[in-house]
Length: 564
Image (tube, rainbow, N blue to C red; front, side, top):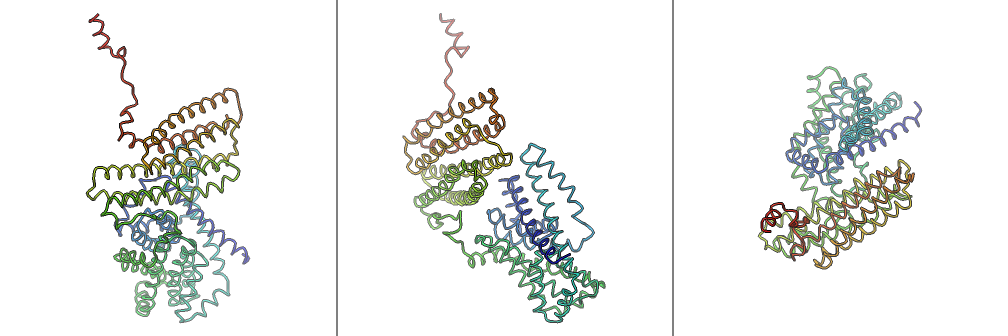
């Protein structure tokens, strides 16, 4: 294969790996949602279970680097703490060695099977959960294919005489051997691919066992740099776990290189086959690394927190006003939390205001920008909720307790609005673009009008939250009823166009009704901020049901008849 073809296959495999990892992450988050957050939190509380999780994931996707990218995405969304992420990474290093140990189990044979099931689940079924499971299976299949492309490209490099001569020239220079092993692993973007290459060269007698061990140690360092390069420009939380994993590997490599002369005789006594010696060494190294550092993950996480502090101004979703020192002074803590809720509501308002543009000509760009805002919304919601929960553990007055509870409710409703925009409205916009559909002029005017009124509702709701004004709260609830009538009228107009045979309305009927439904749900979440204010003033009924008329009560009717 020509040099440019090898390079193109290598780069293509890396790009496919990144895209497939994104598919798996998106599928998992959309399929599991809050349940997944809770289950991951339970599993990763125990470092041993977290490590076992990393072993299983890395063995399934055949790559510690791919596992690292998945873990990074969870760390980025605060799904797991840093100490648990470090434990998962230690397990992922062990899991990648299982791929080399058990070459007879070829995951590539399962790719057609996984793709077929994934396609049917995603394209044929109507269940949202089944569709996301299909997305996950397709993503895993593409990850395996991507790693296959990288391994195939590395095999071509192995057959190069120049490559073999360079390796043999390294001799006993351990530093250069480590450097070359790390560099080649980074170029291959797969420690599995490079160590398989080293194992085959050792089994063929082309390179010696000591040289192969040095290259394997270098590969372990290089695989620590791979996710760092792929996550360039990431936030502080991501950098902590990536640098922590790299520190683990560097420390282990230094210790192992120091005692290498004592390890070689031990390997010879365990295995006669040189190739098996290299595979066993790789496994033993990563198991020893996990045993050494697993009890220290919490301390290392604390140290990384001091070394790599949060970027308060630049990092999106970072709380700006929550101060733990104020928790002992409830009035000040509530004031700080209120400012943070305003911060959150401003981001959600931006998402709501911009979502209508996702259905326009530059829909794809708009969708990406709006999706980026959902991560800070989730982070701020979580931070505010935890802060207020900690505040409620202190003795509070009845007024402070009620205000704190109302803030938690409003924050939760804001997060729900963000989810409706991210997981429903943006998906509808993407579907509309994929199918190249266009609303009728009347239908689009109805949707735009409803959207504008609900954006105005959002702005009014933020003002109501800030001021607690009773009159504005009544206005907010009254407008909700007006919008409900407008939604009903828009739906009736749409059905009228369907009866008239308007083609655009027929093609977009599901989209039209789904958008109206989502806007109605958002309006309900927005209006919730007014109810505590109106209830406190006795301005709202406990039930919307009217009292029964006398004629509606058969017992009362019969009593009146007897009296007559």
